[in-house]
Length: 534
Image (tube, rainbow, N blue to C red; front, side, top):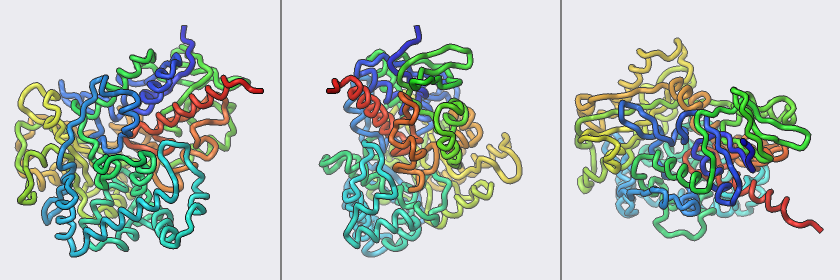
């Protein structure tokens, strides 16, 4: 009874995307998810009694092609197009990311004379570099060793070296003057990475938007891919879990057998290639095509035996560091305070509905990361947050509001002992103290709260080391090296076996692109197999 054309292992958003595309193409598909609900960090989770929302907050990187091609609007996905898209807290006053470029430039000029022009020149240079490299997020990745050979202009070559070999700190110091302007881009490049901005290759995170532009082509001037500060996709009604709900609906529409509480114990294979998978209870799901969207380290360590493929591939994947530092806060408050430090022309209600960020300088990011690498919780947590009930009031039945905060950098292994209730509470309170600088008196308005440390998050979501991107997003772990050169193009040496999660190109965050790329690869191979050969 459990025979399919394809089995997808892992029901995170990428697994759902892969399954929906394969089902739409007419394949009989099973999607197997170990947890009781699909979606992973993007799925709904009951943080507080009767209060469900996602771990993730921002859809700024969600691939518009996935939304359109899978007709997710038909399955209830709606976005509120907030303006501004972000408020970034600084001691000197908040930066507000309006959609109006002139208002953004005025704030940059206030940081330092000429800063707006320098900021725009850096963004334009990165976009030019992305176009000339010809890298796209929606195609198999190039060999990283061959990228530079695509360039000839000396200006492009210098910028390539600065982005791929230099550090984020050096790049921003060269092109910008103010700490605040640098911080705006630093949090985009490294927000979840446990790598200091002084490390080589850390500027590559700024290339994801230029690469997305190459995939989008000549899109509208106000398209999400064209906004350097991101967040322009809008906020999904119902929190980020609405994306998962819509993807699940698309899967069911196309006949996908979505199985929750169904962990996979082992990938089955034989002389002709993959045969399917088996659960810990011994239930087999057979198929000539299996696509894994789980963390590659988990896959190669726990689900693939020694005979599946060259042991050197396994050893290479297992050497991937899983350095994470995610900490979660969810607050239910009886009311919201006015934000402190807003520009005089800011609409307070509009600003409170958008994403907020904390991280005042490159030096602060450096300190936070190095503290976590030493096993110490940062004294200045970097934070990204949102009050999703302002755009999704149905998340609470009454008049209370939910504040969802993702904080960094909390060490997965503290130097002085494991995480416990006391340590978790202390770091959560440290985050609250920082939040008070933007939302004065917020602690007095809390009616309920939930703090989750990195070990809690790993246990709930299966995120190894609390690493939300399935590995570092640095040049040596991207492109044709992600997660290993032998499996980087979604295919593997094991016939019929594919990879398609955040551990593959183009990496983590809620894009859906790895899942879409994996499905495209599977369908391309299937079409080739069915094509008459003369």
